Image 1 (cartoon, each protein chain N blue to C red):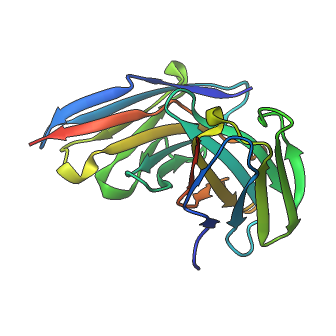
Image 2: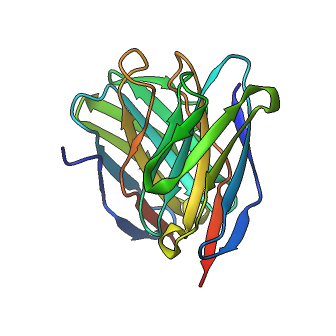
Length: 113
Length: 116
């Protein structure tokens, strides 16, 4: 069964600094990969998704992620953090042809002024 | 579209009581998912439906939990009897099938359950 592992349950960066949130996946077949963001007291919202097209995926709010098959990774980055980026971020995986989506444990991003 | 609608947003109940959580998916979506979120266990998939039929309920923790989808626009998650360890945020999500979409899930705002 597919799964994802997020390295680091809590990441803290200064405003304007690079954001890097790590995600590694395990899947027996080429997967679909997703990053979702959750703001306090809200549901999850899609940031971006990889669906076997371009390996570098651009999402909303300046975030992007690169699919690296050799490293089984799908890390999320943003060049310059903003205070409004403070939230919890979830990596998720589903196998192509299977709607069973599995989420990582989440990484809480704190942005310091 | 109004998005996925869940009710109630907050529920506080006493141990042993029955709890019913409700979900209205996005019109036209043929998949519906129930997730539970806790600090200890993160986001857990409880059950999902395709065209109103339960496909995988292996995540349902025990027989006290049941879920139904009587039609394409409504689903319920019921806990009877409830226990304090059921306290969590329960999310409903819907999506289009893989053939028409890449499986992106659209989440409701969640139902926060507290069992005293």
